[in-house]
Image (cartoon, one colour):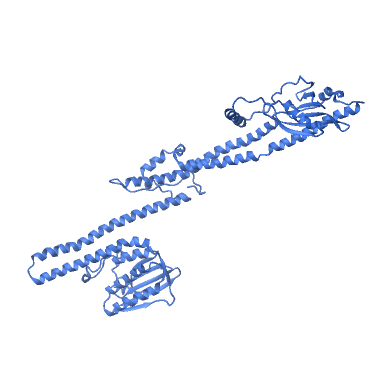
Length: 561
């Protein structure tokens, strides 16, 4: 991962021991061309190209350079046509008695005109007959019958536009048929607008010549005493408008090609940063699924992409955490199964020994003693199986049941009323110190009640007549502490870190077999499921000798509020 937080390609840290050799080999064989097999990569590239093509198509559609050029050329040609018609009108005014265009000096007038290369000037009489013509590339006036065919005007090459036009024309011929009527010539197109000029109106129009090029034509009447006696038509250079439009389009298309290549390259890089790591995660999960059916499946090693500062990094961390939690749960279940087998084996061995001995003894007092052992072991097994069943169902119940708010102090008061009487009946003082204001906790009331009942009953079981049990509660900002302490023998220092383990029990010999050792382990599991903590400690005065006997035991439960 770079310092700027930008992730490119496989630019992340992956410890070599955190993933399988198969994934590393697959990554080493990966190139940009392998992305063609990725549907996600194809979608990324396609969508990026669609956006780019839409943008370029919009630019070409909204490009108004052609329209502006047509309007400017039309204005210029109208001015030129009016200027030429004014010259002929002046000749008519100077020629006394002139009444027709036949009296005009057309050849000399046209020879003096400065016409752009490729442009043409047509002069018509009052009947619409062409009586004079000249072209920009030659200053010699022409007469009807001698008008040459229109020559191609040099327009300049545009590689992309010409290629697209060739493709379009080819498709047009394929779908419309090769046999087409011959298009009208430019002279014929001009002839079509002359009647309007002979009616005394200025005419301007964009037409296509026989080669398909756009030509602007402007026509102006020749007036004598206000009456039109002829017309002058001027055309711009053929293909000039198209050439300019193609050049504009060519520049846009050239930029489009550059942008297309850049977009494809960036899309490939983007696709590699998304598709490749997702493919690694999917491949690791698929390998784990396939291994699950084998004899020695091994463990799934998800690629470590947690160094990425994006959602894929979050996904990698989540998947790795989920896989770790799954394996931890599997390990815990395996350990639990082993502990259960071990714990059940002890009373079963005792039962087997007692039953075997019972067959051999003849004295009634010995039989009664063995029957007592058998009864004690059966109760121990029953208690053990019940606690194991509760422990095995606990995870599922903690997930399924919905948490609800409840008053923690009311819960402790109800428990104290019941267990307090039990403690006092054994000569044990039961003291509570609860705040006056309610403390609302969000959780499973029945399960948390199981925790406090277990802690208080444990305290009662370790206390003797004359001892005391104190339950007190204090609120600290965003948490609440529930403390159960007693004046019993305390907890051996070496057992402080073990009391919450499953099947661990540190009790006097006379209490052997009366507890399964699962109570504190279940309590810890319930408290941690509520986002809390639980710990055990011995009660000692501040200035007491650490090696001296404790004054009692203290269990502290911290819950969020």
